[in-house]
Length: 487
Ligand SMILES: Cc1ncc(COP(=O)(O)O)c(C=O)c1O
Image 1 (cartoon, rainbow, N blue to C red):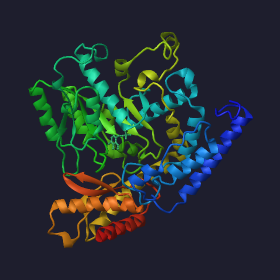
Image 2: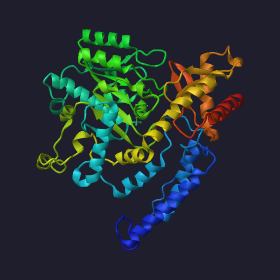
Image 3: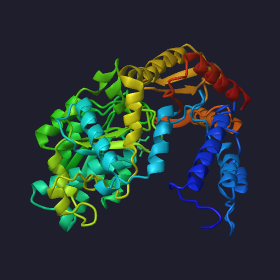
Image 4: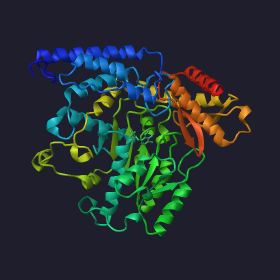
């Protein structure tokens, strides 16, 4: 270690190196933010050729490694803050989230035991308590921060499964799954996130365990079809572990009818998990909080703060209504949450999480809430939902564009379909719209999503960015039309 001490520590050599590295990096970020292009437009092949690891025997040193990251990563990154970057549920981040990341990274706390994260543990627990009050759950701290929606959904499905069999006197945690595994089912809508399928496969039950419920013309779960599917499953002797409702489907932003689903589930003693990865942002809304009415009735909830809460990736949470269900996944690890410590009331979040080592992502939300306050947070969330309504109205007035579905959250589904293509078949229009999306990204000028809604290939704008205006979107739509004409 004579040449350079690369570890962050108290010595002047280390703190000088730290400050220098952070200064060099933040200056590069500020410069990158000025780039006018949304993306430099390099192809897959170009980037594969250009990006090479330079792992030398002596090392390049921090400064050169940072310069190379700027050249080979930063300059060819997608500008998620750019007004024409609207393809995904991928938000630009709050400035204060960046500051939080500096603290999270420099302190490198790990959330798996009190003795690795004392103040962080308390902050996370208080934030979970607060989130529960926003949802309308009973007071308590049952819940945990997660890497995002996929993991939170897994926790909901896993606990629903274990609670189902616990009611029959069987411990899945101890003894694994009982009986005929092909009879174990969960129900979710056709528009639920694919992580439901992936998680059921991960749990050893396969995609076959997911029964899809039909949706209405606004992509919301059809409650009558749900009732029929539940009745059918029961008639077949199947075990329904859970109904997964979605509050904010990935494309349409549809919110399933939560009160009706909760009522039906209660009649049959079925666990309800709500995937509110996107729509959960409305917990802070002024204008649209009532869209989430009924969320307080369900057993568990997924929230994602790296979507419309504008936090950097990763930042999500899982909330569990009845803390007793956490017993189903409890594990006593002598080195982390010993009986001795627990008897003295030392809090440990490891038993609430699927992860062991875990980042202190809660700090980002904590600092975001403190910095912005209620009013400003509500404004930046409501902006997207209101803007989507305005954009939909504008799209409806454009002869060459077709609105595919009325927006519900901050997304607009539409397609390019001018009168000149009135006679063209759907496959040709689908291909044209796919090509428009690809050409826009290749040009580096815009990133518009390409997806399917009820079998129709369409374009998608996810309008999370609170600095984007209707005028910006008009410019983007003009670009869509121009690109289409050139194809
Ligand atoms: C509705 C919904 N649920 C879950 C997820 C998965 O979340 P994550 O990517 O944070 O794992 C997404 C991702 O977009 C989503 O839209």
